[in-house]
Length: 406
Image (cartoon, rainbow, N blue to C red; front, side):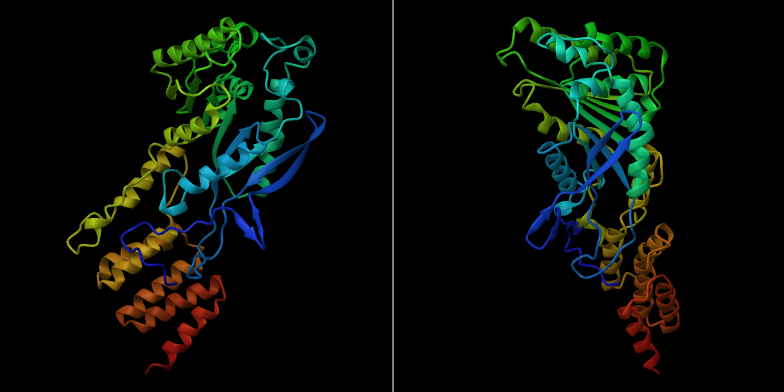
């Protein structure tokens, strides 16, 4: 079907949050009962909006990487969701893929986000007595939450864990002890002083013997010296995080894709927003693509495979096939067709059929291509293939119109 004109900019339209009547909907309130934790766990789930584009075109359904967000309540959930939508397609941005966001609100934060029963400064004895349930919490995520999400939502096999403070502690702990559970980990100013620097000791041991199979890890360190808290405690907190950074930088043969950023202008509580943005840009630093609009539509341009090659690189990094977006490829093809560059247009229309064989739009668009070339028989053939996938009145009218032409 006819796609929106490129107008020499990336016109990939994504709705920022679904809107029903006068309500703006961020996501879905879901829940899963945990036999491991013996409680019902609420989760918040954002799924990218799918539906017709402004021209009414309907494209193939997609599957999306999943962000699991510890401390996943408001406003953290809405901030990450908006960030993902804006930079995963909103306003023409493709800095990283569209993603599902799963927020995990807390029921007992100290219990779930500490790997072993212990304490740290400023924690009272009652709170410390509830600590140490981290392994059960990870087991819940692995054996109950992830299967639940995968069974109900269009997920792809790429997962990211984001945590701040004690959540950051659990992100580091999970990377070290359950590294295959997620592809990428984000620890924002983590509480690595827990249990006399437990994860620091574990990290050093793991780095000496373990391969991380190309896991990505982003560590954010805040400047907490002006927080008003005992400087000896804060100094220990910061030094321990810098030690973790130094350990990770020292070991280059582990296949861990590591990045760290220190935020001198942000303290422990203000750093999450900017760090989450930086983390996602770092994890997906291979994803963004600057399309050469200025020269691409010149008839002499010879690198039509550039998008295919770029998404082959993305596929290798993410561990599964990621195809160029159907809508973008469609827009390129129609633009080329309107400029009578039929051989090049055919390549992009054909790529969509190859990558999205269940998309009725891909076959309908190829029918438009043959109609534009004056090959009515081939046009009817592809329109008919499209109708087998989706009984579109628009496509049927195209066939009827061609059959009336002598």
